[in-house]
Length: 600
Ligand code: ADP
Ligand code: MG
Ligand code: ZN
Image (cartoon, rainbow, N blue to C red; front, top):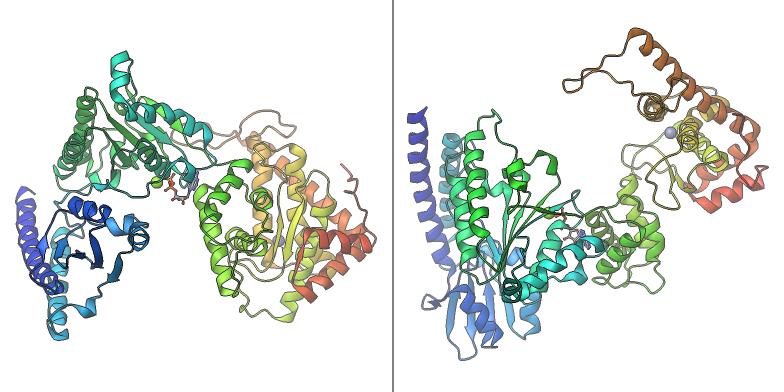
């Protein structure tokens, strides 16, 4: 094993050398003027700040600048810098700097055949490397990304809907602004902050905005960067990260996805030795930092439960800040932040879009606005309208429309009655969420969709609500039976979901005559086996609940046959109806305007 490792390392090093030589040859070809002077990247940024730069050519690995006095300079940005700083180019343009991008094809004196040859060589070396290292190539360069001189930093204004988290980190920002003042008072400032929350809620964004607000450099590394299969590489990266930080008077070190490196120790996976070494190094560095004023370590995770407890001890990540999914007001604020970046129509109602996106994270909402802008552009509009936002929301929620899917006419008719069944029950059964939209345009994997939207965010569900939900799910199948005289496989997902809800009600929520008990099958952690008798009674109760929903749906659809027919016909005609349209059709055909009383 030891021999294998060494041989692998040797081979890798040899390969890396060859690779380096090739890259050097190619890169050398890309510098059109060979007499430009190479300068440090920070000096380059300073030159821009002072307005000395007239022209900039951005290539993959280097930036060439022409100064006002005609001199050429060359600089190499940290890897990924341009991609990580989307404002870099716009800022240059704003400062009247001419910006051009150098493409591969324009590369210097090298002919196509040379490039092809180099590419082939690269391929061979890459393949060899891949074979020896089984796909993992350790890169010895540091992966810390520093965004020091960001000319338009991210601030609190860019982060919305997480006011409590912002309040909690404010203290740390004050401290970073004037560390001396705090040191004089002698209070202990939290040096390690752990941002905890589901993916896409803005943890990374919040950390960046902390640096922006405090006006200090932001050193970013991802936990995954530290996880390598080669012993010692991860630990040395951690050391380097903290050494880099030590060069600044004050700064924020941000470790994204801490759980990748911070997992509880003592596992027995193959790479656990390396991971432990890395984690130990991290703990050592964190302790060393307790004595350094002006430097704060921030980390983010969505799995605080799997972190090694040692990470959470006093002096380390002892301050936890929860970054949760936004509520209605938060979603509206986040939409507003992202809509500022697009040309928004005056009449757009962000509040109503926010109401229709329960459970969306900040990233989902950013995505929604982006989709809406694309939809508007595709439609040739100059502004993003409310309809574009709604279309984007429906696309994200229900999947993309598949208008091209060929459905036979019988299938279409069946689908129309099936959805009309869901919709009528949803409209008339008490305790249900209001109808949002019904469509028989195939979306994602579904042939048709009936969609309800809650009026406010729901955090808990009543028994009545859950039973109404089951009745609505049964509405599709019941309509097929009543109006088409057959059953189709289209109801399988409805049946599955209804059964799931009923099972939860009986086994977890204590909403059946079996009482407030948890009935579960045993697993490794909590051995609990259902007695045969209990299992039988659970099954009977689940069946009872599902059948009650079925009966409710049957009663409603049987009583208001005419209304269901009219709804299906209209769906065949226009394919999509919104909530208000559906209610109008139902009422015009004999259905009550209020929810109908239901036999218990
Ligand atoms: P996380 O790190 O929690 O997974 P990110 O910070 O990477 O989430 O969020 C991804 C993107 O989603 C952000 O760049 C931003 O555009 C958007 N976003 C997420 N949360 C928010 C928020 N609270 N306010 C504004 N934008 C947000
Ligand atoms: Mg993140
Ligand atoms: Zn259905």
